[in-house]
Length: 370
Ligand code: MUC
Ligand code: MG
Image 1 (cartoon, rainbow, N blue to C red):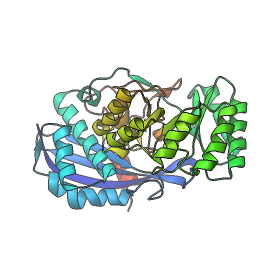
Image 2 (image 1 turned 90 degrees about the vertical axis):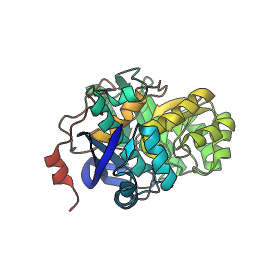
Image 3 (image 1 turned 180 degrees about the horizontal axis):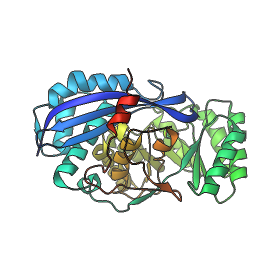
Image 4 (image 1 turned 135 degrees about the horizontal axis):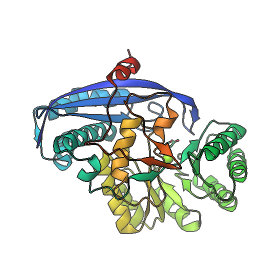
């Protein structure tokens, strides 16, 4: 049992190591909406709500997450006692529709506090870690083919990553296919190269694009068409042997059920923000497992805290396509005392109680938006 005493939020802006170009936005900075949950039992939990490119990727901006917590969720939760995340989610969902990014930050903070109170890592509260090392790819998204090739070769030589995702969809189909196949050819047969179209194609363009990318040895094609086109995604997944990774199309377990029962084959990208928290995201994982759909640990390019919250959840299931939990590596700095350990294409899951992450309050203050 934990009684939530108070909640406080900050908007933390951290520059990226280089511009990160997606089909809908170019990021030069990432905003982490941080929440601190003080509990009456004397423990403090931290959570993070993060999106991409303001309102260009998802329906909640960082500013809206903070507002939803301060004006609606905080009055609802403060002074209340919860036995765990099931009761917390029930209370939040009964009075607040949607707002899964803000709810994800709160569920994360609650899990962190509960783990600290019990002396257990968050993964233990979510079923227990199957593995404490998780595979992590890197996204090449400078916008320039040669720069992406150089970056990919450098990271392979350093041994930091063995697999790459490319962001396409902003240019013409021909230019995107040339870009992806040039990178695949330069990085070599052994290196897994995947693409994320972020909904930018229509069905006809996707038919052409998938055929060229399959032919060129691309391993996985993520969200080629808009999230609302469920029938189109199912048809593409049955037509090609290169698998489709559904991302924007699957937020909750109901989305996963609808797609799988319609005949979708491929994989689902889990993200704590889309689902409303680490425990909620696992509900989608379990639907996928029941339907024979593969899993992938997705990111909204969170900082260390949000990344670790995701890793605790991902560590409890078998991720056939690995993860992309590299968010902290895209940021020039972070607000935690100890950075995560990324090497040999893997990241280590922190082992301490709660999330196992300590916030550096000086850095939090320094990067807080004034
Ligand atoms: C997305 O749609 O998958 C994940 C990696 C990356 O570079 O962007 C995100 C968003
Ligand atoms: Mg994606």
